[in-house]
Image: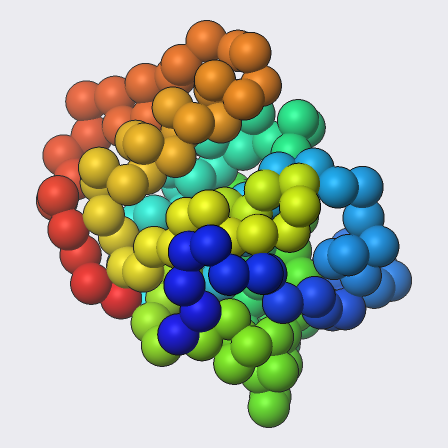
Length: 159
C-alpha cells in the first residue's frame, strides 16, 4: 500500500468523457483522487458526499474519480447516482490501482503540487471526509460546506 509522504505514482488513463489523461501532464495542482467500483456499498455511500465537495471546490483542484469498471457500467452508475465528477477508467489488469496499492474501495488520496501523497484513506470514514472538505476549503479560500447536512451516516463503513 502506498503511504503518506511518498511520491504519487504517475499514470495515464482513458477518460470516460473522451481521450486520455496523463496525471503528471496536468497542471501541478493539489489533486483529489477517488478510486471506486460501482457495486461497492461504501462507494455508493461516499460518492454523493464527495460530489458535494467537488461541487464546492472541484474547479480549484485536479479532482477525479478512477473507476475500476468498464465505460458502459461506469456511465450508467454515474448517471444513476447523479455524479458529475470527472471519471478515468482503470481496467484490468488495474495498473494504476496496483501502483497506488488499492486493497479496498473507496480509496481517497490527496496529492500536493509536488506530487507527494499527503492523505490516504480507505473505506468510508466520516471524519476523514469532513477533514478533507475542510482542507480543500482552506486551500481554495472558500467557505466550509456542510458535507453531510442532516443525513444519517455511519462514522465508519469499511470498503
